[in-house]
Amino acid sequence: MMIFFTFVLLPAIAHGDTPAQAADVRDLTRVRAYERARVELIEQIRPATACIFPEGSRQGGGSGVVIDADGYGLTNFHVVSGMMENRKGQAGFDDKRLYEIEVLGVDPTGDVAMFRVLDRVPMPYAELGHSSELQVGDFTLAIGNPFLLAEDFVPTVTLGIISGLHRYQAGAGPRGRALRYTDCIQVDTSINPGNSGGPLFDMAGRVVGINGRVSIEERGRVNVGVGYAISIDQIRRFLPALRAGMTTQHATAGFTVIDRRDAVIVDQILDDSPAYRAGVRLGDELLGFDGSAIRSSNQFGSLLGTYPDRWPVTATFARTSGGDRTEAERRFRLEAQPYPEDIANVPDGAPNLLLPHPVTTRANQRAVRRIWELHRAFIGDESMLAQVGRLQFDGTRSLARGDVIQKERLTETETAGALPDDVSLIKPVDVERLVRWLLLRPFGEVDVGSIELTGGDEVGGRVCSVLKMSDGGLPEVEFAFDDVDGRLLRMTFNDRITGREVVVRYSDFKRSEGFRWAHARTMTIPDADIAMQYQFDKVQASDD
Image 1 (cartoon, rainbow, N blue to C red):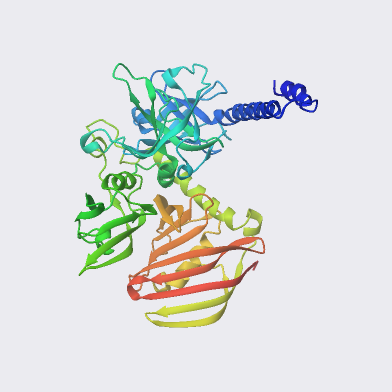
Image 2 (cartoon, rainbow, N blue to C red):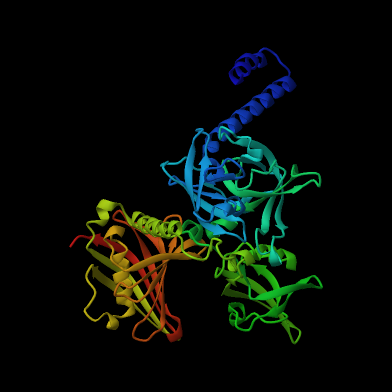
């Protein structure tokens, strides 16, 4: 059709059609091109959408979306809540086949769950977008299985717009702690029972939300043009824990706020909370929270609900004393909100989501291996890493003890080697060097006792997977790796001699001779008021 209109009508423009007629033809051509692009987009993204069912049943269920080639996908917790005993289910795709899935990590408070498709690798998958880039009026696509219409597993597609952003939908159960949609996306894209857990796409084919709730007529559960999706930016913070099979917790700030005279004021605060230790006090005015201006207590509560426990945030407060008003930023970690009642207090015989399960134990091991291998791939390819036996660093080192700073040029050579006989006497710089070498080895060759993924974190604006390593002859070490590309951003351990915490941060990643290294390294011992900074102009690798 497109070829016919373009070929027949466009020559008429050259034979004397009016400008208005020519404009009509151009507009029609653009419309047809847009329609064709939309159809092609749907064909590209539909194979990643799953129709999810309980194991051995075609009743109930919902939808989901696969987000990587290894078959990991997202859905709603309420879609898979009946699968928790054996963590097994089924997913149908537009190839008209059913596949077994296993349920990994779950977020009962935020109504999100992660699954993994078995026996189909590589999987068609959808790219994650950024819900922070959405605007009211943007077109969106919802793909899923409303009313279980997709008997052949080819899902239904609906088109609509973003009707509102930063919406709040109260949760269920005691104190509303379960299935709570905070700071979520409102759409008029048709979402009905069965769409739950399915993807909300932007018009570039990226997942910007997971559909989950609708406002319905009193006469029945039918769409009235008001649906809600959990924002993908919220889900990103929980992804490391979900992939590792964990049951996640949401956060609380350690203080509450009220609206007073066009201001949002701290009215209660726990004196043992991280916020209090960071300097927040009763009567402070909350101006901003993690980059968002705060306009009301309700808005703050809605935004707070999108964070996992222990997530680091920066908040801006104003304080008035003696007629003087001052503003200050406070950096602190959020605290854990209690689990929903039916998760924390499990009846006898019911699945306990807070205990390890064979499926989640295997999921954690796979998540650790994934990050380890991502890190090695970030540094260099397999053949190059196998040849590295020596590193030479050229740059400067600055040692700060309190107000005294000593700076010197530095040429330092490191060689991979075994631990000394008495590991209790090694210095923090030696621990850091030995562990960094350890991370260059293939995962299967590493004998470090216990390595597990313990959750997510944020370092320098990047979502990180946090790994903990113990029983390897070294102090217990915690790593924060970028969850997308595997770069090591932070290492933390306790010095065995002094017992003090040592924090090493890495930045300024550059390529050098085919490898990618952190050219900046900062080691701090907070309780000892010591900071050692390295800035390398050149990093060279060679064999032994």
